[in-house]
Image (cartoon, rainbow, N blue to C red; front, side, top):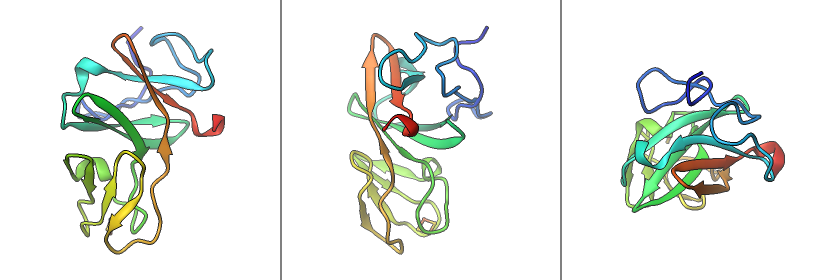
Amino acid sequence: MSAFEGRHGSAGAPRAVRGSGGQFGAPSQDNGFVPVTTTSALAPGAMTWVVVERERVLIANVEGVFYAVQDACGHRRAPLSKGTLDGYVIECPLHFATFDVRTGKLLSGPVAEDLRSYAVQVRDDTVYVKRASSL
Ligand code: FES
């Protein structure tokens, strides 16, 4: 069985990550964290997206620290993972709103809402995101 179950944004064709943890790493025995990617799959300055519980989640590597926020701009729902990452600032590809990937806070642009941010853990080479339903 493959390392990840379903959709994942880094390899072109998306793959999914089962909310229950799938076969990659340990199933979520620890407070709702599910494995989504590996640290070696996402270089510093890069971002990708995965699906957790039917929600697109953007994963970013900022100088070796991993962050996760919703992958939908609050303005017109553009996929932020298709935008740019400059330091900790994500810029929307559609109308250029900017957000702090560390917190999901809106920094500028034509939107009124922050992004949902997700807790992230890294263990060994695996990046885990906490399911929204576990928050
Ligand atoms: S869709 Fe992101 S700023 Fe309009």
